[in-house]
Image (cartoon, rainbow, N blue to C red; front, side, top):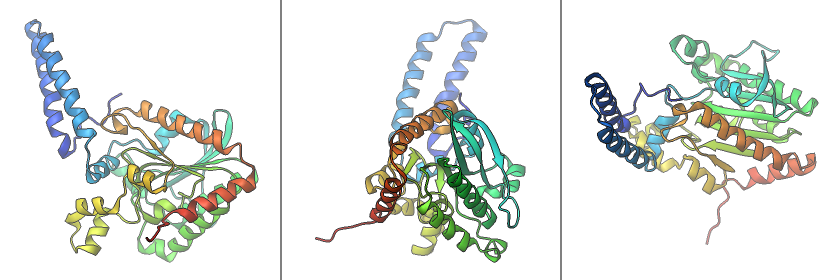
Length: 322
């Protein structure tokens, strides 16, 4: 399945031109009834080589562009392919429901689980409804409610992260955005059930960390996870948001960097070109990674689970002076 091919990033243009040329030759050969299979095979081989060259040598900034691709799969698409019998639950029981953060119940290989995650829109209308996937405080309070419910019924929690950041607007601050994010982190840290976190796209600041405290944190190959967006970092350090690519290098926010630092446990490979090139293959890879994590976590008793989670996060950011 190759959706997203009609939207190309700057660094993909040479590949796009080659693919367009292949289609033109195929159409010409069909119309004129000429055998051009040898020429087509030669150019297709060249396209495969170019594709590998591009995607195996991406800069951090290029990976961020893929993570933000408008056709990148969303939480609800992954839920359809990975889980069975999903029932969405709404509202924080305090203010209202927040469509930017989706939560509910489902089965994962016949195991009842609670699912949480950020949900972006597919078009302008849906993005406005979902607030571009940026939750208000009620979104995080809904997440807390569902996590506590999961704990009560001994259901593991699976959290999907894809957010530029928690919504920074005036009304969010009035309703206690900082407190909601902080309390969500605190409640996750002591939750007495296994937690698996999957970073699927953007992992921006506290908006991501609020539902990112996991016993196992998994991350798609072209996702990113950072204390601040590259544009925000560049604006603060160099007073110029256009230095975002420089900031992306400095922040060390790619999946490989974070694996080296021990912030995440596993990098989930994506199809060449990104998750939007093959949704089914990406969902299958995520499902396998979750399954492997479950196999490890379900062997632990509650006290071991909490002790290991505490140790894991205490060691993040540790350094040694010589």
